[in-house]
Image (tube, rainbow, N blue to C red; front, top):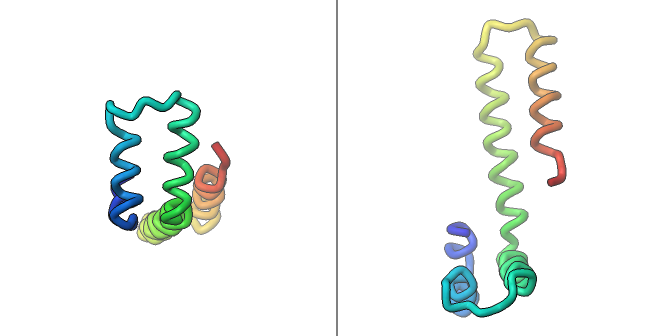
Length: 88
């Protein structure tokens, strides 16, 4: 939400704020669809994916600082990638 506001132009930002306010009178499904389209407009999914991978890499870097066998580290990496890459 906050990153979308940062990336949005003034018109899109106003629309996002409106749809998150109590004065928006759209039905829930329509409101979700509209906010989703606004987020798509500012490519928020790609921004979030980039951030997710940046923090995943930071976590992997920290794993190598642990005194664990490489095969144990790989097990943790594989597990975390499954979590990160899952579709919700």
